[in-house]
Image 1 (cartoon, rainbow, N blue to C red):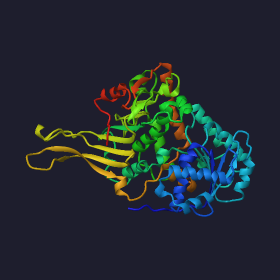
Image 2 (spheres, rainbow, N blue to C red):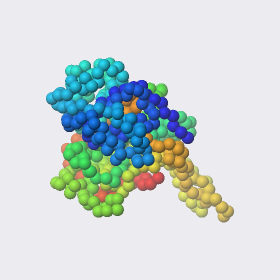
Image 3 (cartoon, one colour):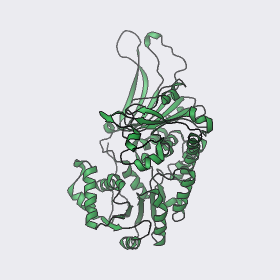
Image 4 (cartoon, rainbow, N blue to C red):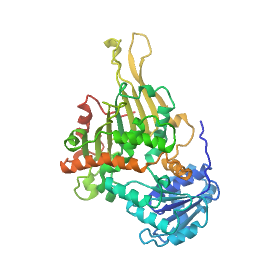
Length: 489
């Protein structure tokens, strides 16, 4: 199978933080890949903006280096790379003082093309940049503004950030990005549910025993020390990525794929989550922090050693969540995420209920309940586990086997990075895969009581050895319900 590339109208893409890590690793390579795919129309322009004093040529050299380091060698075509770099220019700006915004306005000129401002900067600068854009009239016409997480560190700060941006741009112009929603397999979750009659009749508490969502990393702090120690796994991963996955898994069928129709249904799920307050937190949540151990074939330091001082910030969270509505009443959703775990994997495991009565005798073996496993990364794919007869004579012997659909095998196309899809959706003005303001705030309304109960009740962080699957308490969290974490696909 091949993918269909639909060109977008000409646009101006302005990257605040244009010399930063996100621009280098993700944004510039993603834009280059979209040019390689033939998705740009003329005259599309890309403008870097940051405090560094660079010329246009120096910025193009920065971009060339970023692309050669972060794009596979066989995907770099010199002619296309030169054509891409020719689109680039650079304007030094100071987000705090506003110096340089007049030059940015001059660089944009009187273009009537779609204008996208990507704020690849610290959240503390969102309001300043939005204000300077308004002061110089750059929010007029057909603009979009893209903001990265974190959207606050609690409900109050999220509202303040949303207010700062919302007083300049209307909600239809604001794109709050969560790169997990740009992953092909995440989008395929909607196709799997709503384009097939097979699953929807079974997608409820009558047939599903429980759901597990795991986002596991093998890396440690890397270069995120200052941010991560103030955030922790609950704010960094659960509030956004994991709750978005839960919403897509659990939401009702929207009336259409219209952005607000989809986001309305996600919002209902967020508002239906049972609150975890006070004394419930120790029973329904686990906090962990990795200690020294082994990862990727070598010894690694513990979190405190990497940080350089003691800290009670969690690098692991497990939560038993419940959705208080008719479809999901009584079905637990087990969420698990952490750093320095045994494997890098993101997946959703839907565990169906066992057959009500087995007609097979003991010699056939145990009848295992069906599972649907959706692997988001790596090795994206879907597996439906079913029971079949083991081939051969000698009576009835049952086996639990997967019906396997690997994206790499099924589609002879390169798997695009999530940012490629999301950037093009920004240009098109399609907000389906972006978070609306009320979604962000509803997520914080569920997260804040958990964080508060941890702090008030001194819910201690539990150590776990790097290279394992987290604290033993996370195993107890699910096994006291007679269930077990799904460890492999």
